[in-house]
Length: 109
Image 1 (spheres, rainbow, N blue to C red):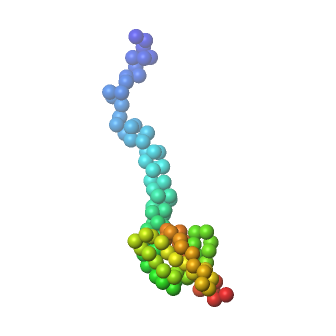
Image 2 (image 1 turned 135 degrees about the horizontal axis):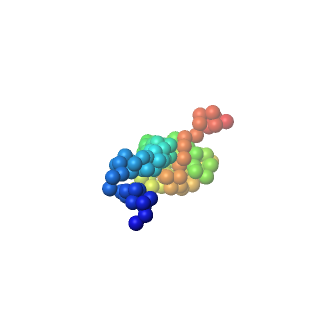
Image 3 (image 1 turned 90 degrees about the vertical axis):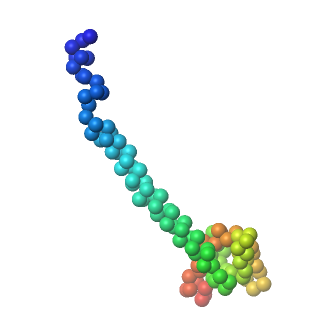
């Protein structure tokens, strides 16, 4: 055995803090992903579910495809919303495709 190889020692005498220091960057990356990506997305999804739960007949809405109209009927069992986009013109959408309320300024025009 050479003298240099014998002096390196091995893993028995190594300090346990070295393992923690090696894992620190991975833990920091996970925390950054959680606080900047996962947490805001889950909050946004929760807000959208609450918005869809509070949807009622007569609300002015915007669909995910950009169609503006008012809610004519809601079928919660099937998850379908009937949106009136013009006089006597109704279109059925999946409830999840209703993206937001139509702003008051837009509905007045």
